[in-house]
Image (spheres, rainbow, N blue to C red):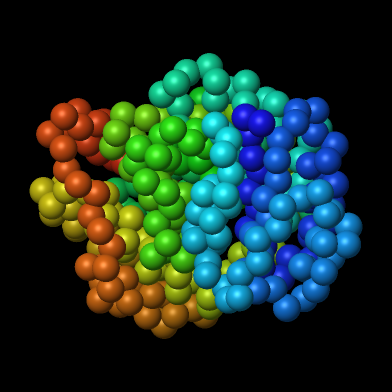
Length: 316
């Protein structure tokens, strides 16, 4: 088949039934690979009993989202990979619409779904992700009406919670960076794709409903805050050449400080600082993207997008 759905799972048994049933109702054929990261909530037994037709990979420890996704990709042989969180539920034509969009241009690396909040269908969860020179990744449309996000458009990054990826480009630029463990790994891989001249798109016809933070336990928590802070250091360090990193350093530090103030008000200030410190201390284990002069124009385009997004999010 030309498509494989890869679902990483860690203690997601309460969500799996509805998620997998929505897959079975899709109007396009595909294979399914579920990668379980040593769940202890009965997920494995549940999948074996109710969905034996889906391939199940069992890990003996929680190796993280990025590594689990890579396992699923390597175990598949499809031209396209649809990454799906275990707490996402699909409309019947979601996958066929994603395929239709990504096939319109061979330079499209990934296509992101129209993600609507599961518990409040009047609000968006994500209409594609953007990135700024402040080092912030932003979910476009979060909390706004889905009626405002009905047009296809280019985005900086596709959310790995419900996006389709082109395998040939993954083979060219590399898979998800397992050093990230979880969070921001989708921004990192989309950034790498942009460096090579590829693009990500948002498809409003591909509708899904997202519970959100089903595995980590809420929008704000210690685990997510620390990892996201650390990985916010990794993304620019890895993908920006040294001259670009130096130019943006003051903006990145400003962004980190503002985020610290934000998380301090949430009661997670120290956790956020610990994540930043870990990021700076361990940054050298992250292999920097190799600079190629032929991609110089792409770096300029990326820099312009980061500046544009910063002004857009701060003033509009």
